[in-house]
Length: 447
Ligand code: SAH
Ligand code: SF4
Ligand code: F3S
Image (cartoon, rainbow, N blue to C red; front, side, top):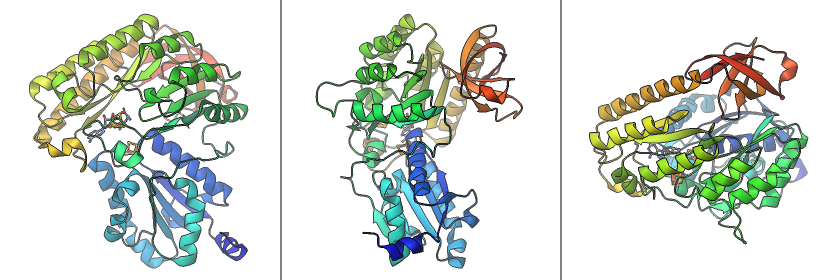
C-alpha cells in the first residue's frame, strides 16, 4: 500500500499538535494515537504554529463540547490559507457523528476520522499528503485493535486500559451509543497481555475503562464477567492497584461488589453516576433503577468496604424536571455523601430519545440547580476530607505537585489527591502519609 517514495516524502513532515476533548476513553484513544504517530516518526509539539499536522480528538456529549471544537477549527482558517500543506484533522465522537458535514462547514479540514478508525492514522495522513483530497474514515464495522507501545506513555506508574468499547444502554439523553457503537469486550487474555506489558514497564496502578464497564464480558462466549477479569488481574505480581470506571447502577451486581471486597488490589473506589434522585426522571432517562435501589447498592458496598468512596454524575434540567424532582436529587446527594460529583446541565442531542421531549427547563433554572449541587458537593467533600485528618493513608506517588513543584503529589486507594514533602526518588512508590490538612479537593500530609 505504501511505496518507498511516498514513505520518504512522509518523513519530511514530522510534527503533530494534538488536543483532546471529552472523557477518559477519549484521552486514552489520544494516548494510543500519539503512540502510533510517534512510532511512525512524528514528534509532538505544543503550539499549532509549529505543527505539520493538527488533530482534535472530539466529544459530542453536550452541545458546548462541540461548539468549542468548531470554534477552534474556525480559528485555523487563516493558518491553513498561509500554509496549505498543514493537515487539519478531526477525530473521535464528533467526527463519527457529523462525518461529511464537517467538510461542508469547515472546508479547510482535511481529515475526519471516527471513533473506530484512529488506529489507521499514519496511513490516512499519508493518503492526504499524496492526494490532497478530503479523507473521511468513519466505518462502523471496524474493530479497534491497537498495539500499545508502552515506551510512549505520559505517566509510567499509572495507566488506563480499555476493556470494552461502545455502549448498548441507550439512556434517553445520551449520544454515546450512537457515536461509539455497540458494546464489544476484549478477551481476558488480551487485556492481561496489555496489563503485563505495562507492569513490566513500571506501571503500578491500572484503571480499566468502559462506558458501561459492568457489562464487560456480555459480548464474549462463556459467561465472562468483570469480576472474572479482576480476579485474573489481581494475580499479577508487582501490580499494586486496580480500578474500573464507569459503573452503571442497573448493571452493577452484588457479586461484583463482593469480589471487589475480596481482592487486595481492587481499590475502595466506585464511579457510579446516579444522574438524578427522582424516580420519575430516572424513568424518563431510561436508567432502569430507582433512587432507593441506588441507596441500597451503596449501603451494600459500604457494609463490605467501610472506607469506600463514591463519585457520581448528575444531570440537572432534564425535560420536565420540577423543583420537587430536583430536591430529590439534592436529598440523594446528601444521603450518599459522594467524594466528588460531575454535574452537567442537560443538553439536547439530536437523534436521542430525549430529543423528542421539549427542553422546557429554562437555562437560568439549570444554572441555579447546577450551582446548588456544586456548592452542596463542595461542602460534603470538605467535611468528608476533614474526617481524614490524623489518619495514615497509603499513597501512590505520581510526581511533582501541580500547585507546588517543590512538593510531591499522589493518590490514595480511594482516589483522594494527597500533597506532601518528599524526595523525587519516591515517585512511583507507595508511601504512608499522615494527613494534617484538608480542602474540598486535596489532602495535605507528611510521610
Ligand atoms: N458511560 C458513562 C459516561 C457517559 S457521558 C456513564 O454512563 O456513566 C458522561 C456524563 O455526561 C454522563 O454520566 C452524564 O451525566 C452526562 N451526560 C450525558 N449526556 C448528556 C446530555 N445530553 N446532557 C448533559 N449531560 C449529559
Ligand atoms: Fe450514555 Fe447511558 Fe451508555 Fe453511559 S450508560 S454511555 S450515560 S447511554
Ligand atoms: Fe464525549 Fe465520546 Fe466520551 S461523546 S464523553 S468523548 S465517549
